[in-house]
Amino acid sequence: MSRKNQFRMSVLLLALLINSLTPAFANDQLSDTAAWAATLARQYRITPNVTYLTANNWEAKLDVYQPTNASGPAPTLIYIHGGGWVGGDRQAALFNAVPYLEMGWAVVNVSYRLARISLAPAAVEDCRCALRWVIGKAKDYNFDVNKLVVTGHSAGGHLSLTTGMLPASAGLERQCPGNEELKVAAIVNWYGITDVGDLLEGPNRKTYAVGWLSSLPNRHEIAKRVSPLEYVRPGLPPILTIHGDADPIVPYSHATRLHEALNKASVPNQLLTIPGGKHGGFTRDDTLKIFTTIRQFLAKHNLAK
Image (cartoon, rainbow, N blue to C red; front, side):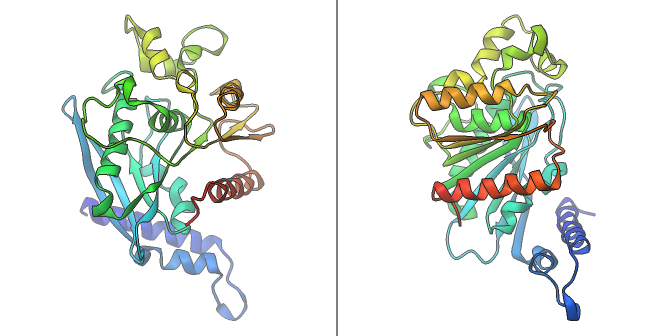
C-alpha cells in the first residue's frame, strides 16, 4: 500500500472509530458527529509526507489536511507532537488535530529531528522552518496566514511556544532563510516545558531533557536559548496554557511561571489548570472543558472560523 493510501486509510479508520462510538438517533438517523465522521474522508484532501527541510541528511516531513469545501483561505493549525524531544511520531498524534478538523480548519502535522538524529536546538530550528514553509506555501494550500495557530503536547507544547515566540534575532531559522515574517496568531500550549535548564539538574531533573542536551559543553547556554521564558516580551501572540497541577513529567511551575511572566509583559494569555491532572490522560469531563476553553479562546481573539 502506498504512503498516500495509508494516510487515507488512517482517516477512514478515524471516521469509523468516531462513528462506532457515537450512538445513532431514533429511526436510524446519525447524530451530527457521526454524520461528520462518516463523510470525513470526502471533506479533506490529504497531502502526506511533504519534505519541508533537509538537515543532517534527514528529511523533515509534514502532512497537510485541507478542507475541500473551503470558499477562501482556511484557518490553519500547525500541530507539533510530543515525546520529550527524544521520541514521538506525528502520525500517532493525528487524533489531537481532529477537533480542529471538525471546525473546518486546515491542519499541518509536523515532524522534526529527535535527539537521536540531532541534539538541541535542532527540533526548535525545524519547527521554525516548518512555520516558514506554511507561510511560504499559503497560496498553494489555501492557508490563512492571519489565522495560524500552533499547538502541541509536552515537548510539542514547548516547541509550539518557541515556534510562536522566538524573534528573528534568536537566529534559529538560519537553515531555512527567507523573507517571510514568522508569526502566528495564537499558541495553545498543552503542558509544555518553559524552562529547559530547570530540567537538567536539581529536583526537577528529567532524563528526556538530559538526553536532548546530552553532554554538549555549552548545554546550559543552549537550554537558555531554547527556553520560552527567555522570550517573554510585549507584543507576543495570545497564549493559552493547559496544565495539570499534579503533572510528574513537566512541573506545573513551568505553567505558572510562564503565566506570571506573560501577565507582567501585558501579553494576552490564559492558564487553564486541571486540578489533580497528570501529564495528559485527562478525564472526559476535563477534556471537554479544555476544548470548550480552546474554542472560547480562539473566538475571543477573532480566530474562530
